[in-house]
Image 1 (cartoon, one colour):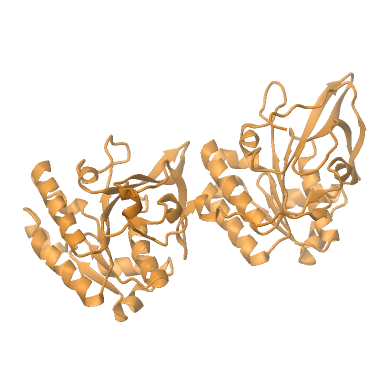
Image 2: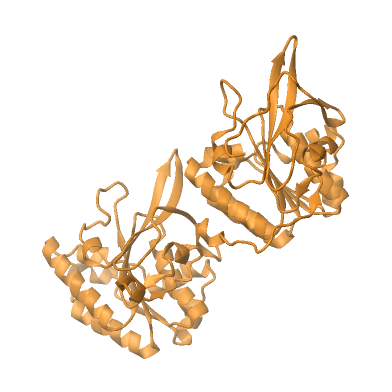
Length: 486
């Protein structure tokens, strides 16, 4: 048996973090949580104690060096944590060592850590705490004249906490673009465990990630993981918070809303399928999406429709032109349209809103038109994390889902980059194409893949008029589209 097998973990209870940490924080040790301004250090610390109390009946001590306890209580209320109630129940205790204005004259000089340790130990014993938070130590160690002294005092503090038998989170600042992990450049070398929270500006948008840099002697997942902070939910790490396998796959078929496409797909889509439709502007993606929603309406199913490229009014006008009445569908309680531009929220927040809508409205079908609009909101890796989490959520609820995407612009029409990344996540891939011919532009459709079912391999002609999309005869002059892996 290795040392890694002998180290117990304490689950944090933070949504999605424990899968990253492979069970939680190493028990009986101190973990350094570092991050720049706005990265979520205090949220992590507060939630670590709060989840310990609410989920695992483990009391905790919060040592605050900067914010007053009243401020911590007030900020925690937005996350749904009743700290004052826990204090009255003797499951949460503050050790307030924050500086006050009247103490300004005595802020120069070293800090008495022996007195601090005694206060922490007293609070731990008083409420039987097994979790401790120190938030944050940067202000205190800034008083010390040299790195050697800081290192010595930090070793002593960590050893004292370990002797108490508590599992501790110690937060510290880091500059956004500095070379080292922490502001002082020594904390990460002294402590056994280091977690880094980042709040990075990417293409004029903020993106939060969490990384377990080291758990000395304990296993963990490597790499950065996208997360967000939600009201009444706290930290949510995406996509690991939602990766659960279903025990079975559906064998039931549902209609796409287009008889010709149903025939190409062997009789329709499986009920738990995720369908990706790619095609250039004007090829019929939104038309297929509206037909898909209309098929749900005619079957008495609820459809959740997200439009990221058109307003609700524009979508209704397009639908009316093809004979679909969104108002009738909505009045029947079978359609819910969420039309907003992708830029109004981050990828993580879009996901949380979708998850909440799914939980509250319980749709049988869902449309996202278009995924390409979300590419503007972050790097491909973030969008892939978003889609992995969304796809897992949709499969868990057996929601038949249709996603649309625009091919890469310029040159030969081909599958867009994000769609290539999503090939392994989708069940059905349909390509709509524009073909230039003598005196006209012809449209075509092909089913590139359909997992678990025979499907039409032909490239067929498409005609769009006021009655919708009509799929016709094969185009013999075009060969079948080849897709690697199919």
